[in-house]
Length: 263
Image 1 (cartoon, rainbow, N blue to C red):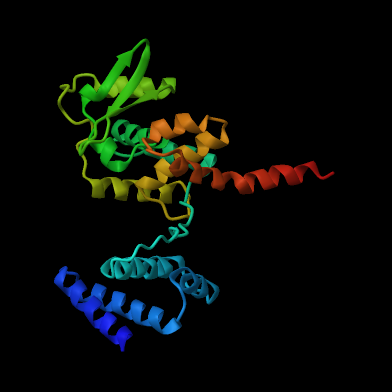
Image 2: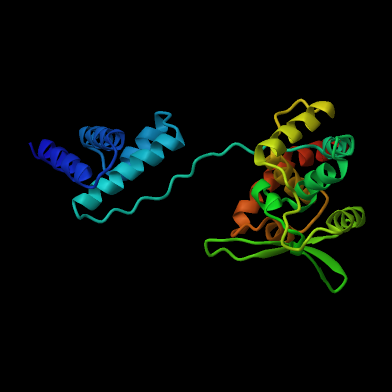
């Protein structure tokens, strides 16, 4: 009888908090299942894991338990559950070069080549590259930098542009553009279509979108021996663990290299 009372009280509590109907139903269903199991919270989650529950489902079950025990004013400490994220798709070095070559064959080759190369070599997000103005191209001690401006309390970051041909292309492109004007007068949708079209013409079969170029930048820098902390700063990741996911992309390459020894 206590279980029924608990679950109805919990449901009323969730409704009073203004949760969506679907959320209330999911939480209540989870807690009914938990109460019927006669297990403690940790054993309950472990049992679900052994039965093949996905991590995303386990995360919801954990959230239900935390909300339930908070409602009962009882402390509950459960280890976090991480969702297994698929590794991002990236281009190989030959594919990246082929994409850049195709960018020089468009109706607006100077703009399109620079746009694609900044995402590929500087690891810029689409919003970041479209947010650049001519005044965001800086010179400091003989090094050309891009200033990436952030809002909502995030720190601005400077990205050094070290490829000489890219620096030349960038400086030639911004010549005559007022400092406050955007570098690229093009919509997000047009960039998405441009990247897809260039990939098709370059013979790249895998699905590709602008963010693929950012993933590719991180991966190719790692494969070519760049320090991971430098890559973290270039990408603007708050934590090194976020950047470390790109290390996993090189595991297959390591296996191939080791197999070549054949001894």
